[in-house]
Length: 573
Image 1 (cartoon, one colour):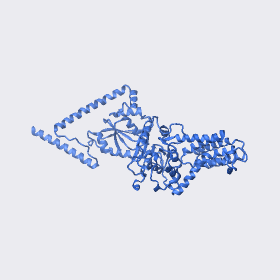
Image 2 (cartoon, helix red, strand yellow):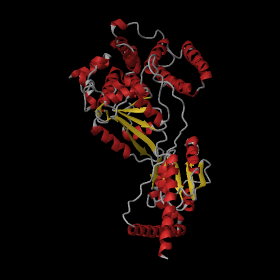
Image 3 (cartoon, helix red, strand yellow):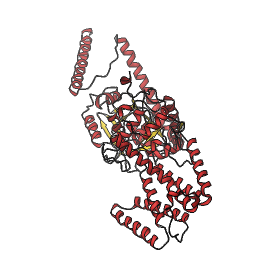
Image 4 (cartoon, rainbow, N blue to C red):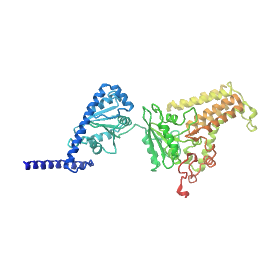
């Protein structure tokens, strides 16, 4: 008898060794890694561990059987608890998962929600994803890999086998939170549920619809790159990473919006940026309490930087990767918002908004010339019309060299009303050009030039000089690199016109003074908006007036309070 027992034991051990050997050969053929096995010193310890595993599995089964009863008593209360984060666990039952998806996500109501049920080996699974947000080819590869799994290859640690052996590790991660799982799926991932496992496998298979890279229409250059940002966050940060191959470049992701869960990425160079400013802005972003950011960066700007009625932009927008990279190297922060092709650059000064990338693409001499022409156009768009109106309505202030100014015949409408009507007319044509198809743009420009311009002068409603100076001011406004600053300057021009028309020279001086005081008091992330004029910095003013050669621009702006001021520390040492 004892010999037979010993023989039976030996045969059982040989069978176990053969099956384990087959499993190892199969794993090596597939190129998978072996799961770590616990080291057991003796048979007694092995039996004890098996007993503990059986007891723990019984407890989990009992808990899983109790959970459906609790949910069936009051489903609405469970749903409220889910939203509040009180019931954030993933059930081990696939039926309960399907029921929860129906209640919370709208499965079987929304046509873009896909819940695919399959059996891999002997394990029922559910694959949950949003149609249109995932890469179908990648998911097909994952499913093809899973279809080759046999029942004998699955051990007791099914979840570990799926996560580590059968799904590529760079695509999969473990998620035990229900709410985090939903956010990941709504962001483009796929969730894989396994019967009996209280966790999900998140498969990173994002593929968002987006347009191809194009040159930004508001920041065109003659020389330079033609690529611009689009509505995909990953593509935008990749364009910047391609230009700044520095390990110190950081991309911090924050989700904003209770319902939209919009991805907001804050980019900076860790060894350059002012950490106090960075932490202050991150706390502002995290403290935003809104349903969402459907309008992306503009709503984020209003919630974190420009909270009042200030018409002047306190951030600079750019759609060019080279411009954003230049500001990051200077020590600024770049804020990317998903679904927006524009990037916010912080902090910003008034002088940052009147510079253009074309100046850096030319030689220092030509770049300086282009900068002066642009500055003159912006200044003319602000004060040319108010000064002309002041000299015409109050000839005593007119210099002798400007005696030729003034209309020969006054129109049927007062001059101040002519200017106001012309301002509103230009705004109306600008808005019409945005909504007009490109095929009709030429016809609309002819209507504006002939009917509104020529006929209005011939009938005596408008004066020739009014149309002339109004056109010069409009050209100067369109020459402003920042579209938001151009609109703000138009408001300033209207205020000055009204002040001159009502109060003459006194109104002009008072209005100019009030606007300057307003600009001096403005701050962007606690940085003076009118720097380097107030507070005055001679070297910084010189670098704005003159476009310096690259090798002579060795210092970063003081206003940014960077950790490293030297741009070329090795050259200076």
